[in-house]
Image 1 (cartoon, rainbow, N blue to C red):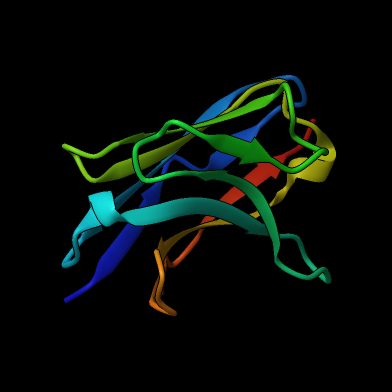
Image 2: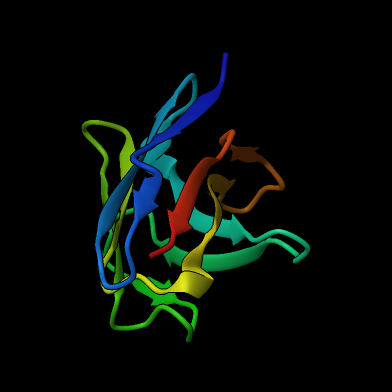
Length: 118
C-alpha cells in the first residue's frame, strides 16, 4: 500500500520556523521526484518546492525563495521542508507529492496544516 505521511505542521508566530517531513512507503522512493505543495483557504493548490531524485537540483516558488529549503533522505524515504521566517501568507495545508519519472504515476500525502499567526 502506497503511503505518503506528512508531519511537522502546527501553529507558529510570524518569523518563526517549522520543519515538515514526509515519509514514503509502498513504492521505490528514490526513483521519484518529490515536491511540496500548499493550499490556502479559497485558493488553488500551488507548488512550493521540488527536488530531483538524487537531491542534486532543487527549485522553489518565488514567494518562498531564501526562506524554505527542500531536502531528501533516500535511505529513510523522507523528504523535508525547512521553513524559516514564516509569514502570515504561508498559512496553508502543505502536501507532499511523489512524481514518477517518465510516467504519469503520482502519489499525494494527506496534508499537514501550517498556521502562521500572532
